[in-house]
Length: 119
Length: 106
Image (cartoon, rainbow over all chains, first blue to last red; front, side, top):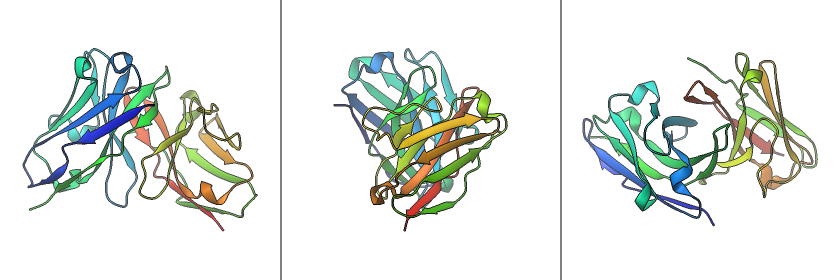
């Protein structure tokens, strides 16, 4: 059975930093593109970032470029999101998700971790 | 930037067919996928590559994509189908979601 478990969310002041983690099991993490997707309270889904299997390619939504960094550790089946210079508009539930096939559908999702940016 | 547009809400009676549309420029040239999100839960993939169903998704879920519009169709809608539905596509390597459609089963 596939599991993705996020952690690291919490309350942080504007301008602060957080590092999210996602530990996975039940599928071959090392051959999967991975992604972070977020959802602001009461709002829709927003793609945040993707990372290739070997970490050699990374893509970000414009609003987080230069502030967020996606990374992975294939030996630990884990995905990370380093978030710096956080803003109120970054407040959201952050989901990690695996990307499947050639069409990059979000096959599996974690339960999400809430990040709240507020003073 | 690329945008996907969905109706905010769709209502359907139990047993009837629900249709949710997703519009975007030349969307038919891309692959569309659809996600169901029930209140308080994580999204679940229900359609990928325009028309394919993952294992465990009932046959009453189907999809199509042509021109500027992708469509999610739920035949014989059940109360358990009440949820928010999101379409999604890729513009180069940038992910785009539609704004979501709240499906109400009256």
